[in-house]
Image 1 (cartoon, helix red, strand yellow):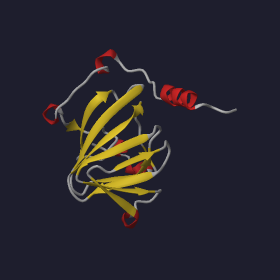
Image 2: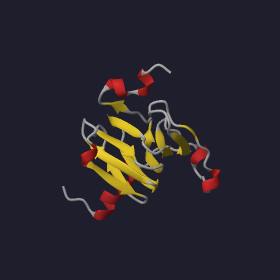
Image 3: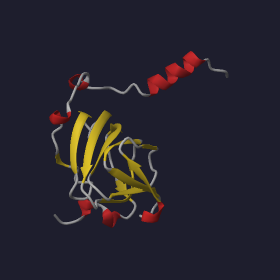
Image 4: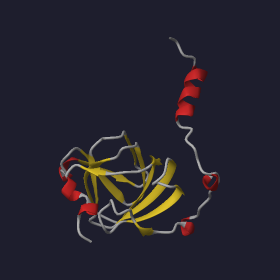
Length: 156
């Protein structure tokens, strides 16, 4: 079957047409409007997060900004939904695989970007304070390769 460009465009556009709540139809934030709090408990302690759009715990699009301190490590993990990430400031060290091998990371400076499909194992760390913006669809989740790395499994 041969598709025309307009049919393909329609199919691609409809694939991204996820429901958005009325409260999120229009939102404008300045840097000063971003309200930081503790990052989700599924991430190692020390990170801060700010939901800019949507709700990561519910179906639909969301935008989550994360601030990681110098020396922060996210052990190997994957996500059930695509992960689309842009580095806002600092340098995000990203590596692929089941083992956190720092010799195999790709440093992404401000403006750097990656997009991963669901289930792709990766890890990250920072050498300086780093802010990233995560865009995806909810509900957001994280599964650590080694369950012992999951901060939700550790006593508080």
